Length: 200
Image (cartoon, rainbow, N blue to C red; front, top):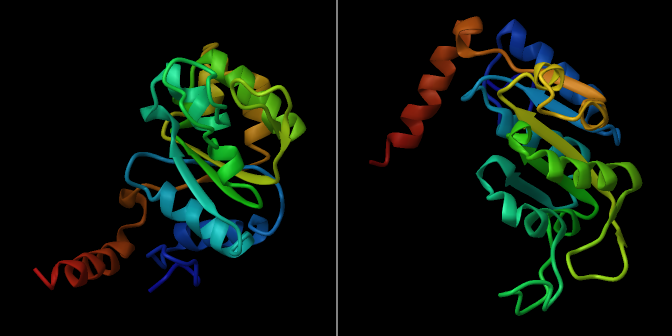
């Protein structure tokens, strides 16, 4: 069974019903949502459910920022114009422009360097993006959903994550329970996996 009808998310345990209630409460708002949870708890599935319930007609753009080299982060997030740097042979839209009127899912946001955090904060605050090499900024209408296995509040205390960016991204915080805290969902998850493997 689905978690209280949450699209794409399996589980009807009490912890997952609470997650589903929180998602439904906030999905249609513009508030940025931070999803915290261990690896494997389904942060990406919950992010997609937030989009499906809140902005289904717009694009859903997932970006694992933890897997992007720092030298490419600006181009991936904000885009670039032809000639902005060696190898920039054409204009390229960044994730923010691609997600206009939809949802941008920033996975593993805790891994962003401090320099990129500064530039991300500016976009989150004023809703405008300036691609590398551009002379003007572009307004974007983007719902931001972030996710992290690391506790961002602790990263702030350690000085590894900007407090102002953390507060901007965590207007709503969802904490996903690990499977050991919702063992009653294991049969449904096992059944789903078996159905997926059945053709093989």
